[in-house]
Amino acid sequence: MFLSASDIQSIFLTLRLAALVTAILYFLGIPMAWWLARSRSRWRGPINAVVALPLVLPPSVLGFYLLLTMGPHGPVGKLTEALGLGLLPFTFPGLVVASVFYSLPFMVQPVQNAFAAMGERPLEAAATLGASPLDAFFTVALPLARPGLLTAGIMTFAHTIGEFGVVLMIGGNLPGVSRVVSVQIYDHVEALEYAQAHRLAAVMLIFSFVVLMILQRWRPKNGQGGA
Amino acid sequence: MKPKKNIQVFRTALLGITLLAGMLVSVGQARAEKITVAAAADLKFAMNEIVAAYKKSNPTDEVDVVYGSSGKFHTQIQQGAPYDLYFSADIAYPRELAKAGFSAFEVKPYALGRIVLWSATLDATKMTLANLTDPKISRIAIANPKHAPYGKRAQEAFIASGLWEKVEPKLVYGENIAHTAQFVQTGNAQAGIIALSLALNPELSGKGGYWLIPDKLHAPLEQGFIITKRAAGNPLAKRFAEYMGSQAARALMVKYGFVLPGEK
Image 1 (cartoon, rainbow over the protein chains, first blue to last red):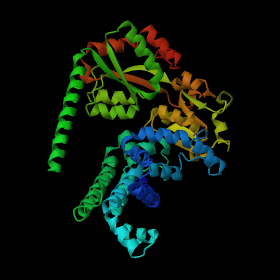
Image 2 (cartoon, chains in turn red, blue; image 1 turned 90 degrees about the vertical axis):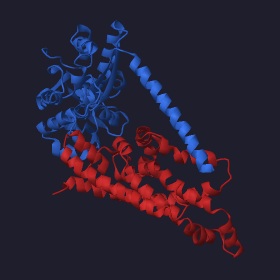
Image 3 (tube, chains in turn cyan, purple; image 1 turned 135 degrees about the vertical axis):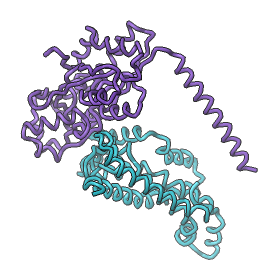
Image 4 (cartoon, chains in turn cyan, red; image 1 turned 180 degrees about the vertical axis):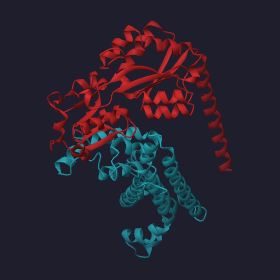
């Protein structure tokens, strides 16, 4: 067999995590991007910076803060315990929450750029034709931003697949819960199982290449996607 | 017009970064006597003090220490990592390196490690491994038994006590022994099995307390170090290796709960 059962388990876990995080971030990221692209509030700058933080912060910093805030003495940990949900570290939902933070800029920024690039014109036109703002958003803005939305989805998905540091910090390396592909490869290397590491790493390499190829195909046709 | 300007800015920035990097590299090279030590995470506190004591008597010598998992250093040294000494929590790793020709001299045992049951919230001095089956304890941290020596010994101790099946569903795995202690220290795991050397550190010893796991429950944690091939001609590497056998260094190792070779 090319991959062991635990390798395959880690692949499915990773795909499940990435799909869920991408879906959640579509719900959270699109309204945020819309607001960031159009608001003139003085909070825009700071919030823009906060959204971009995971791009700059080392995963160890993010993982450390998440471990503390989601732990029994942290505010999030106290909240989840009071709600009867238990503690988030070492659980799959905990990993989802951490990944949503970690991948946030990969969703928000391309969508925000797409919204900003279309300008006011199409929305004004929609308004003169009698569309309500909500109507205009769904029938005009979203379809126009489609390349940006696709780029954002693919980037978010791919970036979550490649997540390592944060998962290592808060995951506890549990099979089927937090032992994602990147951690599994790391474990293979640490245990000097280079053959297994090679196989799984090759799968990741091919996957990443294909994703980037897909992104390339989207970009030249439409200038609005991405940065 | 605009893209061209961007390229110019980019080029200037690149030049600046290159110059800065060059300066930093040359500053690093100006110092002659310098070693980098790769040390297992369980040595963190003991080695920090040993290096500080060494520097007191040899102020011009520069000793950098990198802490991490023994297995990772083993792989890195095989790939040419610039470590001059390698202190492993499991003597099997340096032995393997020596066999493959990566060591300048023979492998030297320097200590026996001990494992303890430790908690930041419960009084572990009144506990034994059997207490971990208590349903109130939902998470127990150990180092990853797949590659971390302390994790392997923790697993052996559970198996020898007939508790493995009962505790396994509660286990979470740290990347190395310091990472494992961090899971317990932050309260995310109520208890954990960590190195005695970490439990004796003031940061951790102020909380909860520990219970020493009888060493008959697991294979000995024999620890060894090597001077790597690249440091064969480095007098500082040799001096530091000799210092590990000195009274001062041995006393610091004992302070952190290590059993020294030739003692019991």
